[in-house]
Length: 54
Length: 264
Image 1 (tube, each protein chain N blue to C red):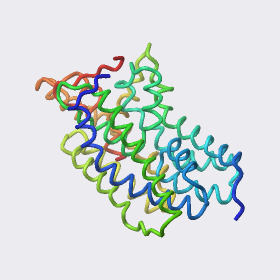
Image 2 (image 1 turned 60 degrees about the vertical axis):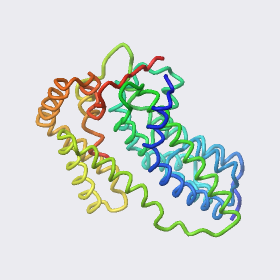
Image 3 (image 1 turned 90 degrees about the vertical axis):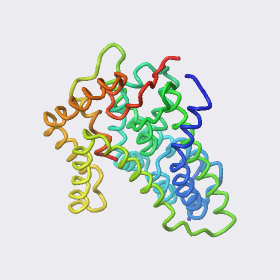
Image 4 (image 1 turned 135 degrees about the horizontal axis):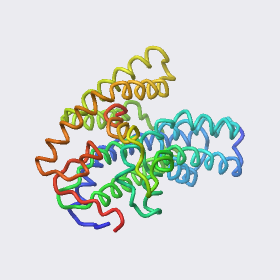
C-alpha cells in the first residue's frame, strides 16, 4: 500500500472537519440569530427530538 | 462561566460512562490507524481532535488507505454525520448568548454522547449549567483524543483484540434513555424513534440512519398537536413545582435552581 501524501492527509482531514462542523453548526446558523427567535415548529422539534434520536 | 468543585465533580461523574466507551472505541480506532494505514500518533491526534466522530474515525482509515477523492470524502462524511444537523435544535435557545469562541467549541464537540449528556443536563442546583456543559464537552473531547492516541501508540507496539468493548456505548445510551423516559412527555418521541429505527433497519439495512431520521421528523410533525399538548401539561406542573423557565424551552433541563450565565 502506498502511504498517502501529507498534502492528501491534511486535505482529507480538513474536508472531514469542515463537513462535520458545518452539520453540527447548521441549526445554530439557520435558527440561532440573537435578534429573533426560531420558528415555533423548530422549537417544537428541538423539544421532542432528543428522546427520539437517542 | 463559574467553575466550582461541585460542578466539576458533577460533570466528571456524568462523563464517566463516556470515558469508558471513548477509551475503548478510541483505542480500537487508534490501533486500526496504526496497523492498517501505518500512520503515527501525530495523525491520531489531528484526526481525533478535529473530527470527533466514532464512525468517521474508523472509516477514515479506509479512506486514507484508498486515497479516496476529496469530493467522496465530503459526501461520505455528510451521509455519515447528517444526524448532527438536528442536534443543535434543542440547544439553540440555551446557547443563544454564549460567547462566540465558546459556542464554536461547544458546536465542534457536539457528539452523540456529549449531546445526550448536555440535553440531560444534570447541573447541580445553584450551579451554572453553561460551565457544566462546557466541562462535559471538554472532558468527552479529551477522552476521545486520549483513546485514539493511546490506541495508536499501543497499536504500533502490541496486538490487541478490542471485540465487544464498544458495548459500553450502548450501555450509556440505555442509561440516558431510561432517565429521559421518567418524563412523560419524552415517552411518545422515544417510541417513535425506536419504531422508525426498526422499520428503517428492516427496509434499508446498513443505510438505515438517514431514512430513520426523515421518518422520525415526519412522524414528530404529524403528532405535533398531541405531543405539544402533553408537553404543555408537563410544563405547567413543572412551573407550579417552582422549576425555572428553562424547563419550558428545553424539556430536559428541569433541575431546580440551575443557572444559565451564558455570557459570564
